[in-house]
Length: 124
Image (cartoon, rainbow, N blue to C red; front, side, top):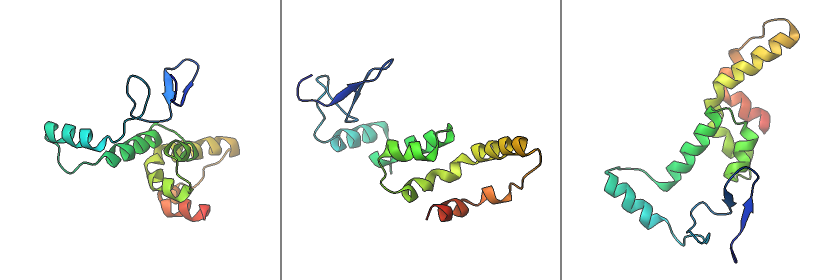
């Protein structure tokens, strides 16, 4: 497709540089009008396009994606921005500690993993 930026990833469909593209692969100029119209037609109130991005990030973390991968997928320059989703990965923190316990052969306190401030402070 001339004039478009896309990449063929083995085993997948075409991956485009843009989220919203037409059949020709060219990006839509502005999706806000169509999005607002769809939301209004569906009777949904108080919902923004950015909320879709937030849901995507939240579901990535809850499905087990590591926080650095989420940072890259969202295009965040600073990890602190992505860390707002870290609290959603509690299950995975517990599993990581259990794996470590097996390695050590003893039980480790889980108290600190419930405090997401400790995570963000360790990054700064």
